[in-house]
Length: 120
Length: 512
Image 1 (cartoon, rainbow over the protein chains, first blue to last red):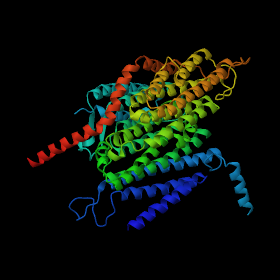
Image 2: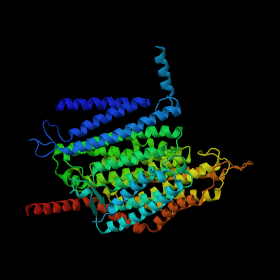
Image 3: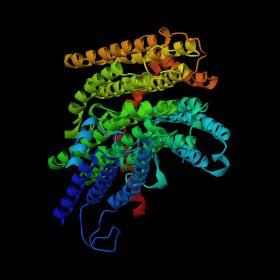
Image 4: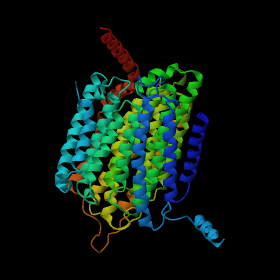
């Protein structure tokens, strides 16, 4: 279970980082969302992984640490609000600048690459 | 029970919420008056807390939960000093904005108050996860304040600032998870008491968590590889917002102090001061890059933004110089640089708008409408920022230079500080020459913005007067900041002693 869990966190993080490094606002937004998922999973694991353990005393034999669950809940709420704000901001940038590049307009190199890509 | 410690969080949150509600949301004049009185009350509360903290460190357990399980607010001298700084800076920024800038878009004062709530909360909290929450509160209001008023430049700067800080928040959570998984607590005092007893394997993980925290706080404090967002964001924001943002980088520095002087401080066992070798080069390089930035900046606001970067580097230096014994000087410098950069942002904005053409470039155009008054204000602000006598910048820098004892420290610190001062001296002289002496009187009537109103002059003057007062009463401030630095190092121990006392009391209660 630990291996699968760690694998998921790792894949999500690497995808998130890769997408964050792209030049368009939409991919950055998706990347940040994936990064947030990865972080939430990671934070959850900080209370140790266990099966059949309730976070309440006296329900099951093993007890799960309730604090990381509370932390994850807070992190989800905050991350959700922030991502929503960023999405609105991305739409606003698109409206203001007429394209969705993070710098307002693509640099000269990027424009050449785009043109080459279209020719093919 | 004394509820004063929570007032700096409750008051802004109530004020901000009230101004969203119908009877107030449409009446700007009423919002201005309430903001004015609220800020005045905040200054009074901060003053009362400063007096309280001098007697003893006060711990406020929210909801009566017993620490370390609940969230605590801790008022020590460090917190009280920074609350006072925030209150004064916010008063001046609020006063300045009341003339014009609050009309550029809706809900300015709500956002303004939530920003103050986040800053105060970050200073007050004694819990690392709660620190994260207050960071987010201050960040989301800073996102909104940054783009307040709208415009192409603001949205672009806003998007970059927000996405960078979201990555920062993700790293913050990873760091918190690592620390919690290793040490088993997020209460700062509890962490400080526990890091000593970690096994060598756990120490490595705790180090990873600590360094990740350093990374996150460096992003907020604008240290070297992570400072690129700052000039753009501060350059794009409106003047009063930029002035208020002068305290934001200091929140990052404060968090670094709490973690690396409080938790991983003298009592950290094997982990004591483990980040110092990382902080040294970062701080020196930040000062160097900031100085180049001041020198190369095309506009006065960009130059001021780079002054913020240099002061962030200088502050961080005080944490490690002389084995951390220079921290009181660092706190003095923090007060100075907050006031001065705030004032500089306001003056630079006026100098830009009053001349009409080329508002933000170092070129000679038509003179400002009030060039004499602005000239004096600019002269005072830049003298303080560069660090020339007789204002507080000189006192802070001289004390810091004096406090370096070892030769190897002097070799690095002296050139860095002196060359950065020289670079800013040249840059500000050049700006002053272009703005005031190189002005060509135009035959047509000036087209620039309005003259400075009385309230705006008062706002700038308070900030500038405070740097002069800081120079005069430097010894008293230093005595207080000495106590603040002591509290920072000591509070974990006394706190954990308190905890054990309370715990034994509780056990006794259970038994009886």
